[in-house]
Image (cartoon, rainbow over all chains, first blue to last red; front, side, top):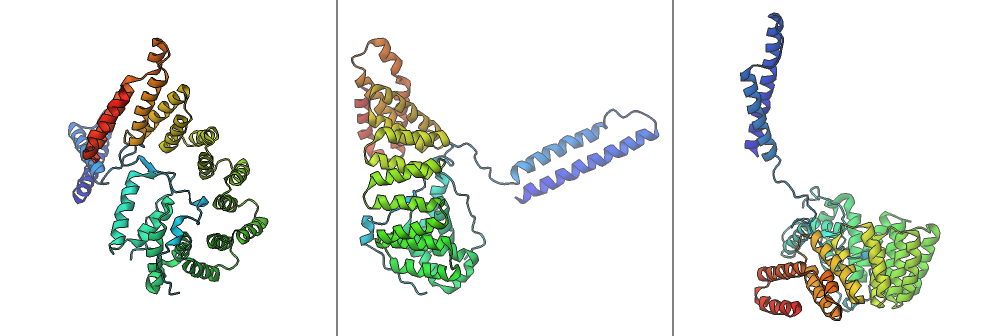
Length: 104
Length: 316
C-alpha cells in the first residue's frame, strides 16, 4: 500500500510540475509575442510519465478489486433466507431445549 | 469486543457464496471460543437465517455478562429481541420471558414488544390467547404486515393449511409485493400438492425478481413434477436459466437438465422424427452431464463412478 501511495504522490507532483512549466512557457511566449500551439517536448514527456505513474498508483493503492458479475463464484446465490416471518414453533426440536440460564 | 467495527451488511434477497463462507468461518470461530460473537450475530440477523441454537447460546452469553452487555450500547435491545425469538424457537421460554421483560421495562407500550409478547404466547402453545392478542394489536394498526403474517403462521401451526392459504391470499391482495409471502404461499400449495397454483406463485416471484436463480430452479422443479412434454420442455428452459444465473455451479439445475432430456426422449417416443429433433437439445444435455461429472470429480470423487453410470443410463 505504501509503495502505491508514494508512486501516486510522485505522479501528482510530476503532473503539477508539468502544469507549472506550461504556464511559465505561455508567459514566455506572450513576452516574445508568439502563438501558443503546444507545450514543449520535455513537458509532454513529463505529462506521459506522470500519467503512467498515476494510473499505476490508482490501480494498486485501493487494494483488492471485488467482482461485479452476479454469477461469479463469489457473488452467486447459494440459498434463500429462511422465511422467519412465518416461522412456527411446534416442531420436533421443542422437545430438546438446551440448558441455558439467565442471570438478569 | 469490537462493537464499533460491526460491519452492518445490507440485508439481501439471497445468500451469496462469500457470505456463506464468512458465516461458516465465524460460526467455527465462535464455537471454538474465539472472538467475533457480535459479528456472527449481526450476520445471522442481516441474512435472516434461522440458527436459533447458536444465537441463543452465544447471545445469552453476551447478555449474561454485564460488561459485554453495556459495551453494546443501543444494540443491546436488538440483541434482546434476537435472543428472545431464538429462545422461543428452542423452547427456552424462561429466557424469552426475561428478554421480553427487559425490553418492556425499556420500551413500555411499544408495538414491537407487544408483538413479541404475542409471539411468546404462540410459542407456549396458547393459540387462542395469541389470536386475541394479535386481534387487539390489529385494531390499533390494521395494516401491520408482520401481524397478518403471524396469523397465517398460527393457522399453519394448527395444521389447517387451507385456512392459512385463504388468509395469505387475502393478505397478498393488499400487499402484492411481499416476496416472502409469495414464497410461503407456494410452499403451502406444494404441501397440498396443488402444483398449478404453486407454479403461479413462483411465476409471480420470477416476474418481480428475475435475477434470483433459486426461484427459477423451484419453478422448473414444479413444472417437472406436473409432467407432460410441454411442461418438461419449459422446465428444461428454466433449469438452463438457473445454470446461467449461477455460473454453472448449481448441481441440482445441471442434473435437472439431464433428467428433463431423458424424460423428453421417453415421452416423445411415439412422435415422428422432425418433432423429436426439434425438442431434443443434445449439446445442452451432454454439456450438463460433463459439468456434473466435473463437479463430482472435484467434490466427491468416490461417488464419481455412480454418477457416471447414472448419467449414461439417462442418455440412452
